[in-house]
Image 1 (cartoon, rainbow, N blue to C red):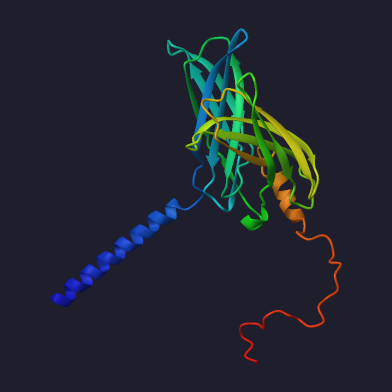
Image 2 (cartoon, one colour):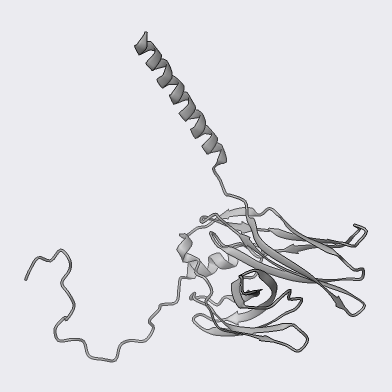
Length: 263
């Protein structure tokens, strides 16, 4: 009787394990993008109101690009009536990395509340390993406050690939001392050559609070991953492009390999 009970328990545990594996199989596939953080502001502008926003979409999938995602921005007035409805196509979201975005629209009526959402992306498997999709290095970033309360962000973006990057979208995110997102804006840089730096200039309006730090993100322009894939296909620019001018050592002064037992 005891042996039969043990067999019954073993069969039950096996059935539970198979059911668990089946549930896991159903859950396989790309995870959805996540709106990691966002901000918005409403500022009087001429005869209307300027609504600005910025946000960060996170892609948890290392082996897929997120394509054709759309940010949906809506704003309502004090009576709850929708006065702004903007659908913003977003650039392709790189595998395993975030995408920064921003925008601006003018409303004739005064909004009092802004909502930022997005429509889900479609997925494109990457043809190469994730490390082939290099980041576009950013350097010499400077942030200056202007007399009208806006901020001017300047710096340089570099193309790390062997092929010209063409147009890049460069987004500056401004944060307060605690790291909270308080503003953001995007500009576009054309004709970025392999291994060369191109200057960007971004004006950020509608900043909510004091600025303590600036993050700058660059990515290829367009809702599909084709441009980024073409760059990765061309390969990376070599780190060292100038041949050494000094004479080689007469004798190797390095340490022997770890497995070399010779004295």
